[in-house]
Image (cartoon, rainbow, N blue to C red):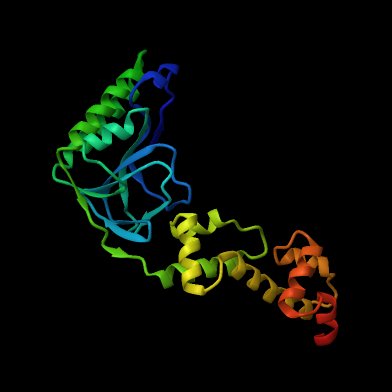
Length: 272
């Protein structure tokens, strides 16, 4: 169950503010190329999941959890059908300072020496949420600070269990482009597919493939266009262009000629 917190206007004057929390949530696959706008703490109740960030993969089992900073590109998903988590999301002008002082320096996976700390605080949040009273925003803020303070004494950072192989990441990106070349695809979308930042994906792709991501996507589109021009002689060139992800027929013609040395019409006549 997920609970969104509708705070009052005075949340903006508080150092910490609770945004949402989840209790016994059966976790669905998440891919966030831009991350979240708030900080998040998770605790694994049952099952196993994986967390991928910055080309690093970690396995999360019962008794472990993860901290995710805002605007960090990431992926997490279940490895077993029963992967269940508690979590809470929070923000506020002093979040960074509080987390730094409490030795929660970065996004990552952590072991809990006392799991009951997380469980007890989540239950308190739920109890507070159920109460019908005024001034809950400040009570949420107090509980959020107490939550973080208590967590700081029972967590240990766990190093990633493995690095995601660069070839596997590039293969996944290429496969995605081959499946979706017929529509607009952004670098942000492709980065989200593999849980990397846009900048890191571009660097990794160029290093591995010796060309940019967009150059490779153009190659896929032109290759598909060559096939479709011959396979469907009844379709107009502008139809083929649109099927291959080109909104502008003139741009399609220009790029097609650059790649093949002839216009789409000339290609069709020669090989049709």
